[in-house]
Image 1 (cartoon, rainbow, N blue to C red):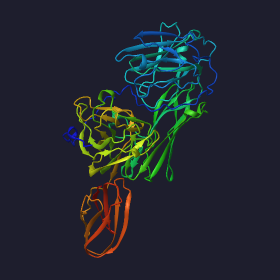
Image 2: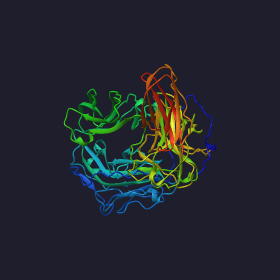
Image 3: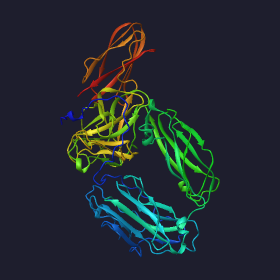
Length: 608
């Protein structure tokens, strides 16, 4: 397919970019979500002072809907069918005979608002201990305009204390089921014999909420928990694109990581000696062992702990980052005390994704006929050259579809397109390129000429397609922080760039040598191969002012060595080396001539 790139060429602006705040992409009811992760069912959670499993009905719970026509209901089947590619899943509950649901996705109407509450009968907790929590299983994912609240009344529903939960959880990667707990001790204290619980859902046509296995239990005395752990100090509102969290770092782009952990006292006793230990184990063994200074945490207190910065040693391979919260007392709930993540160091691959296909991204319902691009922002710490873009394609993509790669500078604001720097050639997708869920096959899209990249500059790197509706499905893997991953519609004049929370499997292949002809310093010069491009044989000329032992090295765009040849000791003068590229795949390659003191590199292109 011949592609027209006319709509993609915008004026370049190499100056400093303003901080963007792109809107969330209005997908087709988020039809391409990651399959939910199950948690163990039927686990022992201790004795309860009240419980409700909704096995056969709402069992005395009442519904109060003050806005809209969508109500809480009892279900044994889950959400109704919708037009989404993957409908909202059934709650993975330990009591599959029934649970409570408000099914806004199926029963709601576009633009219609809802405010509906599920209210318990009166619960007598006068004989219960003073320190209590309500816990429940749920499945929930956020769209755009939804809030969920858990509340308590002790005066017959005249007044309610409530707290919002699920705020900012995003659309993707929600556990199913997810065990949630809320401290209700202070609310119950006003009148323990007259307690009512309330689950309130407020939205403008979103997904809905499913809950089950509601129980009131005693809070543990000692329960410090890691709420979240971060490898870097990325916070877009404060740092812009700096300190983004990458899954793979090229060796040349290694920089200090800034680990931190947010911890919370979920017990009812004050905790002393609270500290976070941090450990890094790399390919060559342990690299970091450090612990934060001890502190005191009051009940329900939550705070962030910044840990020692570290830079991976540079050994190629995977690094495991382990976080653990410790305290003087023995923790009653040790399973929430730790968190672990991994990063990798490679020779020249830069990546955000987790490497295994979990879902896909394509155009939204309102833009399915438009050209579109998906990708991630990257910031380089050292100047380099972009030689290729790697993308993964989901198996729902028809064979014969056409893709390309592109690199942009960020736009000056969210009303203009990003500035195009360079495009790769187009590539036709084959059956061997397709990935099922769990796949990890990438397509390499080389640039005709490597693109020079500056240090401390953000770049938007994408895979794109001009194909029509329901064609290219770019694979995704993992969850992105807001603004890091984006979908771009290059042909639209308005509403053309949005952030997404799934991470596109779009990677950079960089080199600190490609595209740089290292000029002769001690009498060595390297000429351009002829012919170039070539399909089988080409000749590489070089000149030496003095005898020297020489060698030739040929690499592909990923940095893999495809030829290493010792040319022996060559006399002073002009020389010619013949290279046979007939067995190489089509693409861009580099050839490096080296002596004991000099090294020169140039590019060549193999065509078919």
